[in-house]
Amino acid sequence: MSTSCDVRTYDRIDQNKINIIVTELGKQGATITGTNPWQADVHKGGVVLGGVWDPAAMRLQITIVDKGGSLQSVIPTCNQVWDAVEPQILKVQAMPMSTAPVKPIDPNQLLLGQISSNTATSPITDSDRLALQGDLQNLDDAATKANAALAAAPAPTTTTPPPAAQNTTSAAAAVSGSSNTMLYVVGGAALLGAAYFYFRKKA
Image (cartoon, rainbow, N blue to C red; front, side, top):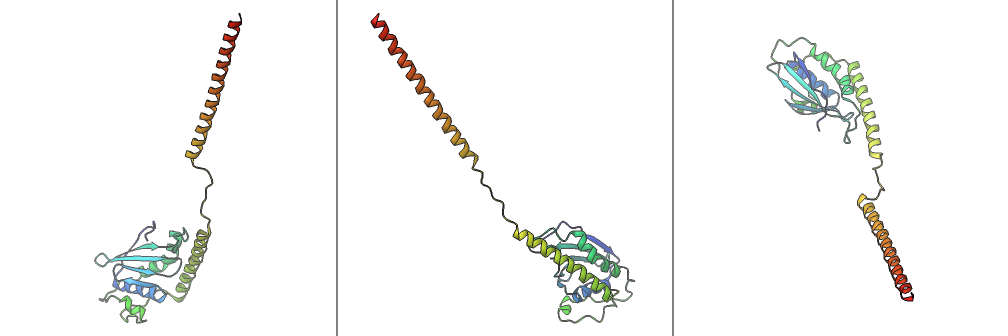
């Protein structure tokens, strides 16, 4: 499910940096599908990231594919997700470009715990990883609470009768009132006519 979050672009991203980013995602518990493009479910806050890499331009585009969980709560916001994940991306982007050919890493290796020896040392430290996991856990807690509130909200109800029924009742009352008035008029006219002929005959 797509979101309205912006797409962010990072230049000077070579194969080695892609390998590091994919490896870090795997180390930190993300489930990665695809190779290029790929998606990474971080299993926190309903966040799923998507990435497309242009090797010729050495340009990486990342977007937030999903957030908030199954009910799509407004929490976390796009900025909250970017604030959590982008610092590590920028650290990798700032690394020197590789001077030797590098083979792409296979995401299936991450599932088996097999990290390619062809990947350079990551600039991401253990404290960076702990900080990110803490931020993602906070997003997860907030999204869980927001989704629980959405699920518990009562459905709107209405007790107002349909307008058509009200109009029918009003029309019936008007017809009834008009009929009664007509009966009174006709009855009064008949009495006056009878009295006129009676007194004329007497005269």
